[in-house]
Every structure is written in C-alpha cells, then in structure tokens.
Image (cartoon, rainbow, N blue to C red; front, side, top):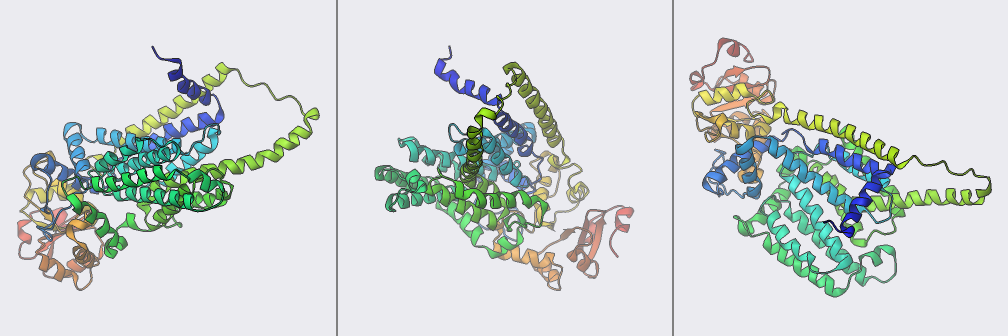
Length: 540
C-alpha cells in the first residue's frame, strides 16, 4: 500500500498540470525528448565504436594502432567506459538503444537542472521558459555523444553540492564515486572538479565577507560543513585516477586545452558566432540573464560564480553551451521571477485601490475540463515527439553503409590493396569503423590505416599541424604526403588538396563521383581498379 505522504508529490504534479505554467513545463519536458534523441551526426562516434570493439575483444588499448603517422603514440583512452558501452549496445541491437539511452541521459540532466533551479511556491511558467531556452541554445550539441554524460553527471554533482550547502549530512560523500565513474566515461570530469572548487570558493568568501546581502547569506555554511566538502573534493580528485590510465587521465584535458592548433582547427572548440541563426538563442539567454540578474534575491554567491564561469566557458567553445545553461539557470529563473513580481506588485496595488469598482473574477473552468485539456495537449505533443524520434532512428546517418556516408569509397577501399589513407578529418572516424575486419561492415577488408582521426591527443598537435598543412593544398602538401608514406588520398571534389594532386604528375586520380575523389601515387595507381565512368569523373 502506498502511504499518504508518498502520494503527496504525485498529487502536486497532477495539480500543477491543471495550471498553465505546469502544463507548459510538462510540454517542454516532453518536447525536449525530440531534441535529445537525434541521429548519429557525430562522425567521431564511429572511431569510438571501433575502439570499443577493441576493448571488448582485447582490453583497453595503451598505444595508437589506427593512425599510421602516430603508431605507438600513447593512447589515453579517457572515454574507455563509454566506448565499451557503445560497442556492447551496437553489437547487440544496433543504433536504436544508443539513441534512446543517451537521449534519456540528457533528459535526466535537464530534469535535475530544472529541479535545482525551482523554488517551492514559485510558479512554473518562468521555469518552463528557462528550460525551453536552455534546450534551444544547445540544439547543435545534443545527441548520442559521450559529452552527454558530462552534462548529466555535472547536473547531479551540482545538485549534491546544493543539498550539502542547505542541509549538510553525508550525502556529499556520493560525489567521490560519482567522479570516479565520471573519470572512466569522459574527460569532462575535470569540469566537475572545477565546479566543485568554485562552490567551495564561493562558500568560503560568503563566510569571510561581512554583511547580510542575500547572495552572502544564501551561500554561508558552517565551517565544519565546508571542511567536509573540501575533504570530499580532494578524495574525488584522487578517485578520478582509478581507471586504466591512472594519473595520466589528467593529461588528456590539459593537453587538449593547451593545444593552440586543436583549438583553432576543431569547429566545436571555436567561440560561438552570433551571426549564425543557431546561436541566437544563446545570445538571448546571455542578454536576458544580464538584464534580470539585478532582480535575483535568492541566488547564493557560489551560484553567481558558477554562472560567470559557465558564461566564460560558453564564449570560449561552442561545445560548452549546455553546461552554461546548467550553471546559469538558477540565476536566470530567480531574476526572472523577481522581475515578474516587480511588475505584478503595482498592478496588484492598483487592483486593491479599485476593488469596489472591479468586477468579480471570472469563474475558472471546471476541473474535469482543465484535466481533459491538459491530457489532449500533452498527448498531441507526445505524438509529435514520437514521430520525431522515429525519424531520428530511421535516419541514414545511423547506418555506416547507408546514404549518409561515402559508401562507394568504403567499398573501393575494402576491395583494394592495403592502404595508408589521407581522408577528410571528419570522415576518418567513419572510415576506421567501415574497414574494421571485426565488424560486419568491414569483413574481408584490407587492414587500412588513416593519417589522422578525431582524437587529437592520440596523434599529437604536431601531427594535426602536418594534416592541416597537407589539407590546405599548398606547395608543401605533396612533401607531407610523401614523408608520411601515404598511399591513397581521399578528398572532396574541388578541395585545395584535390586541385594540387590533379596537377601533380606524381599522383593519379583512381576514383571520383559527386562527393569524393581518390588519388594514388602514379607508381601504384594501377592496383586500384575502377569502372570507366568513375575514371571519367576524375578532375582534369
């Protein structure tokens, strides 16, 4: 039997759904599923999948065996747990469970973040607006990616830190196994430790600074509670090293963040371009936060610091936008509620002065009618969301041999001799999986290798620099290809490197279609047998 106390939260949920704000929040939560369950647009997924298959078959790799330009380079598999999970799910049931699982993980992070920003007694409409804006700002980031785990684990961590500030107790000890798990799933665990440190600094400042400003009083904690949090922070930082890489797990994020070549070359590490329409929701979130922040009255100093840190991260790299939404939402909701209250107070006072002349408020719709309306609205939204999820599942991007990929190139490489392939950066991960002889798609293929693929730290920044030099198609490009021992170049038609090789007598076009062109050294071009129409499509 369910107790009366256990039924109270469900009763409150039902009552909230009968109000416009609660219904709007429920609609945002349902519609967000369509944003989180997206096709596999991330080309890096495929090399993560190949590494995951290697982990299931032979354990965690310690050295690079995929890029011929960095053979033997130390491989810090900072996502080995996620890669093994990818391989296990994909090998068992294909792409669908991956899409659903990571969509559910993202949705859980949204729910935890919204719960953290909500204050008991506040209307749900502002919270729903903040949640919708948060989802919209990150539409280009959501999807089945390993960094999704960082987003949700960060939401759980800040919820634990909030609880510790308000109530104390030993629940904060859960942060230690949380970070230990995080350190085996994604290198973003350093972000979690950074959040932890910012909260500790904010609480220490609130304790040390005089005054009774709301931001200070909300962040103050007994020093005994603060010391427990600091001890847990140290234990969590040590727990992150409990993984196959040991202390070297800290090298990956530090080397990536310090690599100027990687920061300049990788799109998701670029600062947001507010001239693009996709960045306008982020711009609105930033501007609106600055406008309403002065109305915030219940936001702790540590949350102000977290919002500032999140804004810095979002302006630094596009991939950090979801984390900015997580960190800024409590301040945004508090400020928006304060602004709404300041607008309502004069209206309420005017209504009170003229109460004798005001007509009685109209009668509310019957409870049954409101419940029926809520059910119809949510059912319609659920149908639309379900249709979007099905469309994501059926997308050709989920099939490595489908129309979303250069499958004619895959077939040619599989049928030809073993090659060292200089491929487009984004397509190299797909190529690694497509030619993996352990996978059904690659059975019977030659053991091809690629010049570079998505994990920059596995190749080193110098190798990425050489790749960029060759891809630019300048006079130095043929020399880079020759010194690396490249035996096949795959480029997009019209690319600078394709134009350079088409005019170089030392290289021959062996295949071309509307989407791809392949070049081989003149001495080995005869080994790549293609049909006459494909040869005729070669440039020049």
